[in-house]
Image (cartoon, rainbow over all chains, first blue to last red; front, side):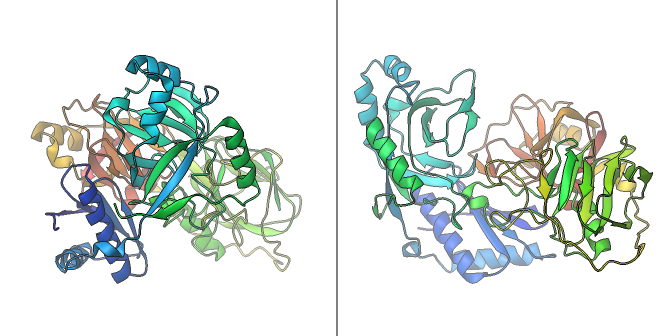
Length: 242
Length: 281
């Protein structure tokens, strides 16, 4: 599939490439395949960051001829992309939905008129797509929240949301990778490190990957934490072709 | 080592920032006024990415525990070595137990302290730039010991100095490119944005500078997209937000302008109440 892209010079060192303004997996796959191709072609002094329907190519050279680079990018895209160039992984993410962690879970269940266990079941059922990482270091923008779980953000944001908090805000769900202020409804907590500064690749997931949550008891949560602290926990994962 | 006797205000170790980690949501960070940091490093014969101390409005008080050479740059905060005034943009030999302090602000908003070989605090993700949740500290703390090279071989004052043209500290013109959503503004809104005088509001930090005057508009939010330091966002309430070095990597407000690199240095030296005018280049 080929999309009609627009190219805009964004700053003295960068070019913004935009797809149609939609949140769509075909668009995401096209963006990631283009990113892979750009990085394979221009190997030095370049950084490509992506979001839902855009990609920013930043050239770290002292001086750069951006109109020549726009031509280069257009030619690269016209050559065609290989979807197979992007390798994807599905990660299984443990979440403890106990009331201690899921401080808004009862409220969400009340608002939706269903039981807490129904909410947990609806939240753990889908495979969510990682569209990109932003907002906070290690914060995954996930697509695929079931319509039944859409919840408005809280009118007054909390000043401190715990690291690992699993939350719903509007039509999005996500995990707070670090302690942060935030206005989302907190329904659980994951023991996994979503942002680890000691690793060269600080996030285990990347755009295009998928994640699925599974419910664990408080005991299991503590056990996983212990294993993580001992550096022996292996995140359950499998190849993914979404 | 350098011992922190007083921290000053929001004083942090900064180099040119982190590149290549924005895909993980990590901000660039790095010195706000690259020009000033570069001058200080150049005068010392340092590499341009050597880490310096950046302070805001109020300088720190530092005790040197070894011999080195230093250079102060950026705004003028009346630096003193052992209570004797020293000049900005000059290299100065300091010896063990010498004390560097600052007086009140005379010009600019941010000052820089460079030392021979740079500050040698921990490198995290290829940069020493301090940032919350990335480095151990987000600012320097009282009694913290900052590692530096012990330059035992310096024997005399070499007096390298540069007559630096500091008119940018007073410059009102902020040069910009049109942002990706600039053309969504009406002609009237575009004219106002490019002709009106705006003032820096009290909400200004290493993350963003908000402006006091509003630009009423009916622009729709965009699907969350990429932003950079220097991106000027426009909120539905008309607030103009200029993103700075510690900004998030993505955002959902329309991006109406993008500052040039030079304009970022200029803005880094402005504070609450200062006036500015955008000029498209």
